[in-house]
Length: 278
Image (cartoon, rainbow, N blue to C red; front, side, top):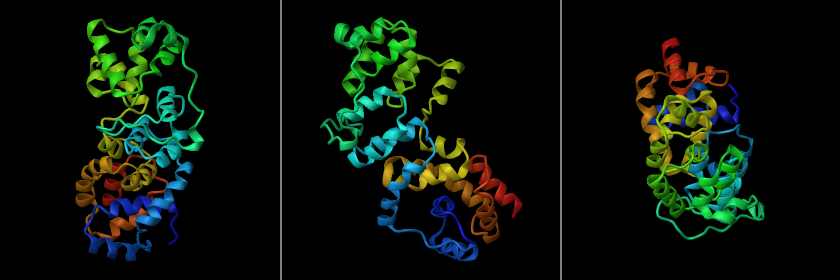
């Protein structure tokens, strides 16, 4: 059977959660080629441009690598988040403990959004407090770039709560510190809005709660090259499911390989369905 690159990467990711010898036997049984080596995996990054949209947190996980070349690749996934766009255009680092500015890829130079007038007149906290609409809050919030900026926001909100629009705009930024986001709100409508913006608790949530499974697994298959510090959580979340519902059963893996490309549910749903059918 001939598999698309997307299906190969997705199934390879799940097979990587099993015993190596069993995985080799299963590949032979279902006609799946041997997995690509690290160099080939790195070359596949160029094809990330063909990905469908991914949650905002996935983009942040890539930015945490502080790799200018990766930043250039995920630039199109930042979308309308002018805060992240400004940070990337300035070479702001996102990795833990890093403060030195990054090299800005040529494709990102000159791409910084216009600096809002309110920031020029009132400074960071003043502009955030002046925001009386979503557009003005988005503009002011786009100037929150570094850890020091987020600390200033937290301190200002602790002294006197920031306006609702400002809290809304900052809470849906994937780089908003979790403790500050929790302070901004915990109502179900608030948490729904954060989820709709693609802000996740971690890679385990992405691996288990998002679909379609084939696309999620395709993204995770690039994790060791693009967000290695995060992908392990996804692996830990999925490994017990793979073990319990697929294991070393060649028939179950054959069913999964047939289902995966047209299956619209999550990865846990895919794995359990394939196991049940087999």
